[in-house]
Amino acid sequence: MRTPLLFAAAAMLSASAAHAQESVTADSGRFIVFQGSLPVAHENFAFQRMGDSLFITALCQRTLQDEAGVRHPFKKTLAMVVDSRDLGLTRYTSIQEFKGHTLTRGLVPGDTSITYFGELDGGGDAIRLAQPPGRLYVMDSQLFTLFEVLCRSLAPKTFTTRRVQLLALSDSMTTPLATVTLGEPDTLRVDGRRVPTKRYTFADESVSFELWADDRGRMMRLTHDESGLHVEREPDAAPPGRRRARGVR
Image (cartoon, rainbow, N blue to C red; front, side, top):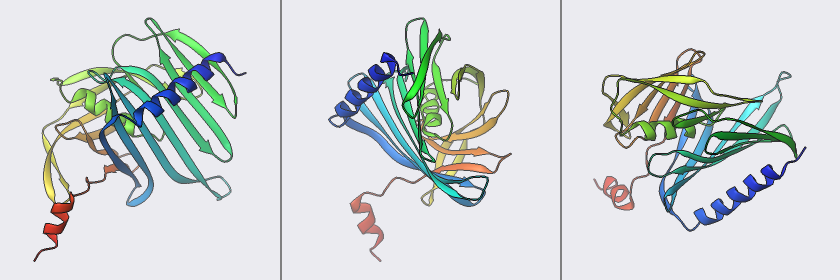
């Protein structure tokens, strides 16, 4: 059934999106998702400043094949509000469109409890749970911008290994703890140059990823060796002056 909470959350995010049109874009870019050597999806994202908050949006698009071999377009968007100082979660909503169905999921944290809501094709429900302590990190399938949020949060911190509290969204919400381990300093070749990076191992009981982020916390690469999945951040577009200079022989 529909609940007033769903309408309230949707209204909040609509107002935030309208406000974001007048805000300052702090960063934007695109992730390319590969399965082996084959690009299978892309995800555009943007971080926009709104006073003491960051408004984060992302759009993932790809094609998925069903059991009969028929290919279907898949689209998933997120709208997320976090505190600009520590990236603490304020609101989260994702909307998935696939095979003629629309699935909406969202989170509304409070002081001691958190509300998780889900809606499929206009009908759904909401549950309220005790809110886990500490900083909360959302994990929602097919959305790699959420790992970018994690990397940005870790960038100013000094540690070898630390635990992070996840909010994993599926048909229900689970709250597993993951471990992030900082590896040796590394470099990646980006747009023909070597970029210093921090390398993290992100693992919980079921999965492990390798993440590379620059000194600003921007995720440059993600890999999952067992499945052959890897994600690459597209290089930033060169400024016009730089592009013209490259053309001079």
